[in-house]
Length: 340
Image 1 (cartoon, rainbow, N blue to C red):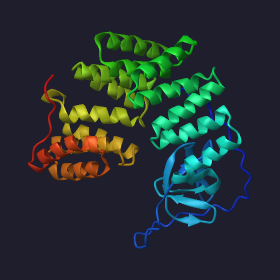
Image 2 (image 1 turned 180 degrees about the vertical axis):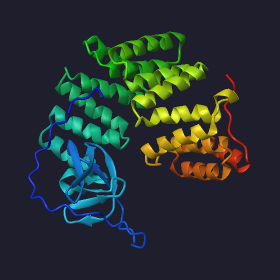
Image 3 (image 1 turned 120 degrees about the horizontal axis):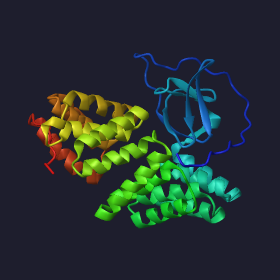
Image 4 (image 1 turned 30 degrees about the vertical axis):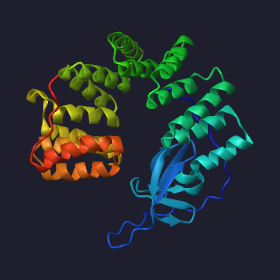
């Protein structure tokens, strides 16, 4: 994305041997779970001498078994070294000490990244603003702040940041796509037309920029042009198979469209399952989509199970609609959107 690369943190350690496979016997008791955040620019996950994966700064991982300086990450089937992570509950404290010692723009960026990963968006805006004060020409920080303002629902502030980045001469598809998303959220005729212009520019800059295809699909979906929306979501997932949002949004149409010609229960289950796999079955809205997909496929037992799983992870505002759909599944009925 449109972000500067994080230079390596200088860490001097005495390396310990990398263990082999972690504890994965079905009869063995599970060690206590640890949730950690990666603090190195790139952390290598290993099993013995083999590299089995990589994680980047700000990633949140779930570990279990500890062996010397190494923590076993079951999802990656590999070990991460202790120099590369801190417990997630101590991540802000870790980077706050760095900010206090060396209050550079880079230090504020690091803490902002941590706060973004933890969902502390208002505090992240504060750190990004301080980073911009220290480095006024840092367009990446301004773009990041614009995205964060959007998450906070502050669309005018978000658009102002993206306008400034574009006015400064940025020619990256991400910033045009980001501004388009704000214009879509503003939902006026003029703003949607302006969003279409930005998305055309983004795709002219890079025809394989998946987020621009996803945003283009979102506009068509909101306009009721579901055939085009499905096509553009499909293109986004073909370009970037790890694009969970595009998989999820495609599945939602396939599972819940009012018009039967757009529905395909089995394909919806495949798409929603992919989105859940990419997000570790942790996001309530994506689990909700998977539940709807199972219901469209007449797999109501699975629909009920996934809806209940979504409820456990949902915020209070999300729960009402999920509960309403759950009642339908319990009655052996799929959920349908209202015709536009």
